[in-house]
Image 1 (cartoon, rainbow, N blue to C red):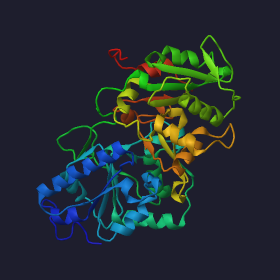
Image 2 (image 1 turned 180 degrees about the horizontal axis):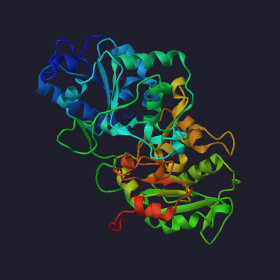
Image 3 (image 1 turned 60 degrees about the horizontal axis):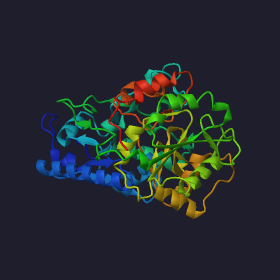
Image 4 (image 1 turned 135 degrees about the horizontal axis):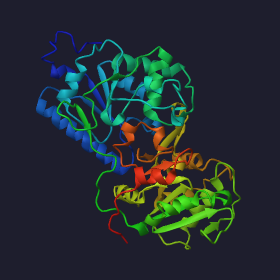
Amino acid sequence: MRSLMQFVPLNKPDVSRRLDELVIVIQSQRNSYHARRGGQRKVEILQQAATLGQGVPVIILLHELSEYEGVWSILPALPLLSASYGRQASWFFFIEEETTVTLAAVLQVLSRYQVQEEWFLGRRLHDNEASIIHHYAFSEDPISFGYPDPAAGWALSAPLLQRLAERLQHENLKSDFTIDLKHEIALYIWEEGNGPKLTAVPEFCTEQRDDCATTFTTYLPNCGDPVLKKDVFVAVKTCRKFHSERVPVVKATWEKDAGLLEYYSDVPDASIPTISLGVPNTERGHCGKTFAILRRFLSQTLPKADWLLIVDDDTLISLPRLRRLLRCYDPTEAVILGERYGYGLVQKGYSYSTGGAGMVLSRTAVSRLLSSGCSCYSDDAPDDMVLGRCFTALRVPITHSPLFHQARPNDYPETLISMHQAISFHKHWNINPVAVYRDWLQDAQPRDEL
């Protein structure tokens, strides 16, 4: 492996060599909006390279790297990246679609590190307290473990990426689930202390500063006026035992922002009101209830809306922000949007949109799903995972937004979620849910849209 440092004074980097040895992976998605944004970012970076006038980096849109949808979880992508670019590359730099890169500054940062060594670089995040989404890892000292903020970009030296790719060929992962990608990547690289920890790079930024090599705009882009209230149908899953405990929280917080909303329970309750779909309540899973909701959404009973939002009765959500986000998507496309998880992705598994964070489906996606004949294997099967398997079989990608959250605000690093305009949180454990809604999700009252 040629070193970026070889024969190169630190204060006068050899830009040509470094550009040719840099692989930039844009963590793009297959959905048309995201594919377009990833392509625009690629063009911007290539235009920068052209102004430097000394070669170009390799730029990869992640969703184009393989037909296999699971490459979003990065680990399945590493052997592909190593096989295709491992010999000529010195650095692999991962960014998001909305990460702005200053190429010359990135190269200057990378020049500080000997590329013959194993390096894992990024903007360091850490947990302030042990978190369920990280399986309570490092519970005695959660601050001690750092993981990268993907919005700021993160980098692997080629020797490290190649070793990781080789490990993946002969080693089974400890968990079949991909829940929080950035944390799990860092854990895999750390290898229980046998691999490198994340090295914090101050120039990898999300905010704008003069010394930044990267900056980040937003996960809630301005794609135009929000979709109208009548274009989003909201289905709230509940059951008898939560009618007096959870439903009042929904009514006290976000119900007022819904144009079309129904509560689905195991029993009718006129005081709410709830609708029984004839599916008995299950302690877990709720697949039977969810598929009944999907069928009702397409029926003549309901007004014809472009979008269906399915939430639990302990989901807290900002419908105004969701309607802003949905303007970016084409409802005539099969879209399922939310917080993306994965199951068995290194072994060609499937992705799914986790239910507690809220699942958004376009009418086209619901129609394709139901016409396919895909269904629950039992009423108490996990609805989100069954939907994921069905959509994977239909080659409909699960579209991810970090603004949806399966857990509570205190389960995430405050530095991360404070810069987001969150769309949802989930669970009422040991929190005041009304206060969480007010502090994290409630905006100043916008003008009322029809």
